Amino acid sequence: MGGLLLPVVDAAMLPVMGSPGVVEESAGFFRRIFSWHQFRRFKQYLSGLITGEKATVHRIASRLVEHADQSSFNRFLTLYEWDEERLNRGRLDLLQSMGETRWRREGVVAIDDMLLPKRGRKMPGAGKLFDHSSGRYTHAQSLVTSHHADPERDYPLGFRQYFKHGSREAGENGFRTKVQLAVELVDECEGIGVAAENYVFDAWFLFEELACYVEERRKRWVSRLKSNRIVHTGEGSTSVEEWAESLPGEAFKKVRALGRHYWVHTQVLEVNRLGRVRIVVCYDSPGLDGEPAYLATSRLHWEERRVVEAYGLRFRIDNFYKNAKQNLGLGGCNLRSLQGTGRHWQLGILEYSLLRARICRNRLYRRLQSDQTVGAECTRAFMNLLQNLIQWVYSNSDRLPLEKILDVILR
Image (cartoon, rainbow, N blue to C red):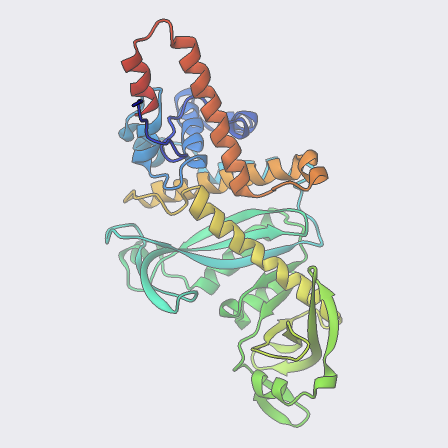
C-alpha cells in the first residue's frame, strides 16, 4: 500500500518561524543598538545562523516564513547604520553581568588564528595562505582572535582580519603581521579590563614583540616552543630539542593535569630573544615515547603542572573554531564587502557566546552531567523552531489549503 513520501527536513532546511529560546531570551539586551526594522533582521539572522550548518545570507533569507528577500539582509549587513563594536561590547557586558560567565583572574586569554576556506577569488581579504593543520596552502580568509577560557567557561573576546602583504585590502587598510594583530588584541583586552592574568598562544606567535608587550601590561604568557629555538645552558648553546634529548629519564616526573597524566621536566633557561623563561618538556607516556611538547612561560616560579594546565586551556579556542564553522556558519558568508563580512562574523560570535552562556547557567545540565556542547544547544534551538512550525500548522490547518501549508513546510 503506497503512501505520501516527504523529504526529511534537517536543520539547514527547516523553515524559520519565530526565534529559538536562546535568541528570544537575550535579544532584548541589544535592542538599543538597532532601529525597529534592524532589530527584526537582527533576530531573524541570529535564528538562521543557529540552525543552519551553511548559513549564507541567501539560505537564511530563503528559510524565513515571514517574507524577507536576500537583499534586505544584504542591506542589514552592508548598508544599515549600526555599530558592530558597540554590539561586541554589549555582548561582553552581558557575559560579565552573569556570575556564571564572568571572566576570572585564573583564566587565560588565548591568542590564535583560523582560516575560513573560500572558493570565490573576490572574497574580501581572501588569498593563498598556509594551513598549519594540513601542511598545505589554501585559498582562505584569515582571522586572528582572542578568547577567554578557564576550567568552567570560555567565549571569544575579539578578532582582527589578516590581509596578505601586497593585497588590495592591505593597501587600503594597512598591512600588519599576525603578531602585530595579536598585540592589538592584547591592547583591546587590557583596555576593556579582562581579568585573566595570563596569555597563551602557539609557537607561531611566540615573538619578542608579543611577549614583551604582554609583560609591559603586567601580565604573563605561556606558549608552545618550537623545537629549533636556541637555548643557553651551562654547557653552551643548543636547540631545545637537543637539550631535551640529553636529559636522563630520571629527570622526568609524573604529574596530573587536566585530568590526564604527563611525564615532565622543567628548568629555567635563557632563550634567544626571550630572555630567561621556564621551559617544560612534556611527554604523554611513561616511556617518554613519541615527540614531546615544549612549553615556555615567563612565570619563572610556576611548577610544571600549572604551566601544562594553563597551556591546555588554549585548546578551548580550537573548540570555538570547530563549532563556529560547523554549527554557526562562521565561514558561510559570501559577501564581497569587508564591513558585511565582519558583521557576519560578529553576529556568529554573539550567537556562540549566547549558547555558551546558556550552558554555563543551566544547573540542571551540570547536575545530570548531560551533553553541554554547543552542538547540543543548536539541536535544542532546532527543536524550538520545529515546535513553532508544528504549532503554526495546527492553528492554520482549518483555514489554509493543504498546498499553502506544504509550501511553507517545504520551502
